[in-house]
Length: 318
Image (cartoon, rainbow, N blue to C red):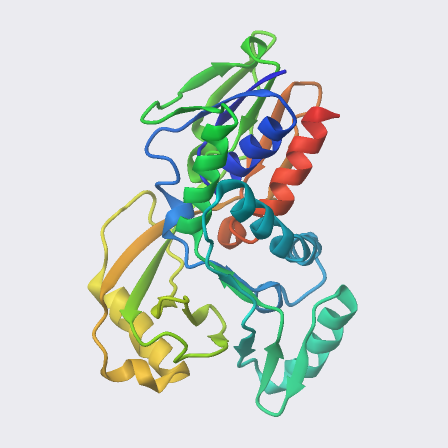
């Protein structure tokens, strides 16, 4: 079957890889560069325990995808021949005292490894991955398996009848694409960008240890020593400006979590556009069509990439 995927970020390229492994003819197209938007901007935190405090569809998806991650990374590294910075280093989460016990009990029942400590929760299996390494490896395996990659090709409209299957995986831009099926436009779930600032520091490798988090403020360190602090949530449309005041506030809050950062100057400040959809994430087929949706993952696109790729590919192949 020939499959057209719109959106060459982590999710779109992971779906392309899985389909190409099964022998499908895949075209992967993007309005910009391969992985050039939210996928490469993300810090790469893999922390279902820190993200989901209540029973929900999100919690179930996060737990399942985290279980897939070690094998997903190992297979991708083996097939691509490229190293991927991935580690389950654990995360210290400074949660409110009154809610810690209830949260730990709920998450433990959901399958999350969690330790209740006097002033925090510790998640020993939480980790991180460098999304730029994932993208580099996914590009190689897609190219090796014959995926046609088209960059700088904005798609305003697509007729699903021209492909065996169509996947919409364009992140915050997904619902802007007009998709025709049988001559009529499909109604796609709306999605909007939520801008997030991040700040990066150069430190000695291994100096942080476990990641640290309080609410939406976090600090993680990649194996190179590059340490990332984040993040804001701003409903500002597609505004790409980096706000120094927002970065300074992230720096202040991150230093409260890890005082080592207080005296350091950032090496880099940047933003990304998380795809927010009220009833997301959308990992499904549009009923009665040959169109699949793979967007609306908000803060968890990197975490949910293995699961999304597996589910969408399996449905198309099925």
